Structure formats: structure tokens, C-alpha cells
Image (cartoon, rainbow, N blue to C red; front, side):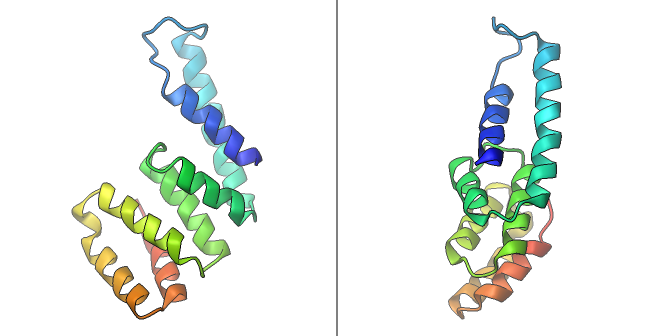
Length: 129
């Protein structure tokens, strides 16, 4: 769960109030966040561990930036195209990030109703933030 632990640490630093009294300076926090962001991206793009990605997607849902979350979903869908629950979770994320995705949500839901899980997964991979 290497990536999971890195994301957990990243979220901790992201949530730090740089104006509050902590043992870290605002510069230290920014450096740590930038470092973790880079390492997480590298590791997510190389991982083959769908179980870890799924844990991240559920445990840190909406805690990451939209582009980070979309990147992790994209990697998951690249590795496996047969997980209806993750597709449904991604639809929730699309609803959260705005009405710009209404057409895509409608098409994905239609594919899910028709039990076209792989096609729905492929469509999810094409959605960018």
C-alpha cells in the first residue's frame, strides 16, 4: 500500500493550515506537497495494483484535486474494465465536479443499464478534467 500511504501523507499536508502553528513552515509544507504530488503521479502511472487504487478511490474520494482523482480513476480503468462499482463511484465524482459532465453521465448510465461494463469503463477513460 505504498501509494496509499503517500496519498494519506499528502492529504495530511494539504489540510494543514499554513497560517496555524505547526512544526512546519509554509515553505516546508509547499515543498513536501509538491514532492508528494510528483511521486504519487509517477507511482500511480506505473502501478498494476488495482486493489490499492480502488482503496485510494474509496478512502480519499473528493479529498484530492479533481485532476489527481481523475488520473487515478483513469489508471484504474486502464487496468481493469469490469468493475461496475468503481464506475458508479466515478459517476458520483462527475456529479460533484459539475454539470459539464451531464452528457457523459447519461451515456455511461445507459451503458451500465445495458450491462456494457467494458464500454462504460472505456468511456470513463476518455473523460478528462
